[in-house]
Image 1 (cartoon, rainbow over the protein chains, first blue to last red):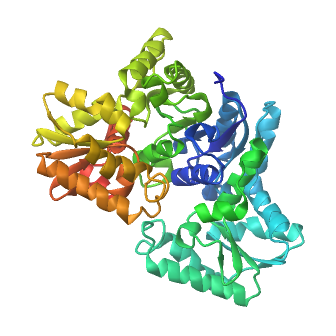
Image 2 (image 1 turned 180 degrees about the vertical axis):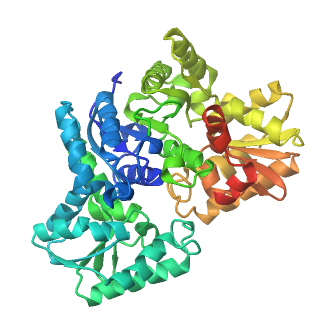
Image 3 (image 1 turned 45 degrees about the horizontal axis):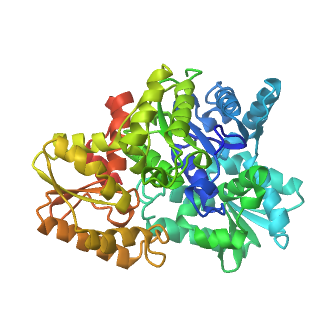
Length: 264
Length: 264
């Protein structure tokens, strides 16, 4: 056995704390491993108290850019021996935050490469779902308003299918945040109202021409875990990010897409 | 916001990888937190490839003591700022491994204190279930044979209730390891045969006088998540360890036992 570990996968957690665990679970479940020892080396730093609210900053309610704290955590992962890292939080991928983290890593001479979950998701669509030319998006309202997925999809030459504001709010945002039936309040099991409204949103996006749908909020796959519904692939960015982290470090250990979906 | 994190909770993962996530989930779910920022700082190092099989060493099939690799990981957690750490693996608590880790930490002048999950479990019983004077144990065969819980319970003046070898093997070990219905092969959902056999084992322990039962293997609470069955408390050592880690760092944030059980 070696006495120190290299080629480590880093996870910047705490945004929120459970999303960090979810990403690691998706790394483990998509790894071809037949014993404890065959699982991949992962380091998680989950320090939520250091990281200010991302949406507050992006919508001008705070002047403190959480990028600085996130870059500090990424540098600690770099010093631990992580060569690549992921950050399971859509809002932290807004260019005003993400680009500043990357700049600070470069300035510090870090070897660690921070993957971009949104880029990885759009690349995954292009490589594995090339038949989907029009892509629907479900997310928090912040991700919708910031056009985090929309802009990247359009840059990749793909069509974007959105729900009208009122409908998105009622069917998607409420399914995430409602204190009675929202997934944040009630996730095991998910409340049937949340599931039913999200299925209705998927139906609306399909009617509007979506040929694949991005579940752009870490809570959504808890309520709609299916790989596809009525033939329309549902794309979970955290699962895609987990695959990209494995591919960057131990590509020979990545399970095929279908097999990994069955195990989930 | 502070720009570095102290008073970190460390988790030595990888034994197995999912048990590390499970411990962290139990820290989060027992923390009184109303926003991402209120959750506690946790660092997980899950490097399973560095840590040789614990049972192989303890039963003389290998001469390499995994304590050295585990101590190396604990020292990395110490350098990250962790003041306390937990290790969600029963077998690694055998004195031949655990005591050597602690010696190496002391020799290196580490500030980090490694909690002992088995001691914490027995202390929890004494403090919170004082009416239970005879305690049943369900675990892997290795933990049974090594008497990890039995010896500590007896030292604390408590009676130990065990199943006969053949019965323990059929009802408990098989429910963990059977390739068809065991929890390691089949956990979401757990196979009804595993659940039914474990309930039968609980019944047998109760008949033999157990007034509380320790679920001394990280897989067991997946199949019997109840806090008690027929009035007999079921004790999950990983949940107890999570409580002890919170108590050692942020005691004011620990949720009361009953409330935390409802949320689980």
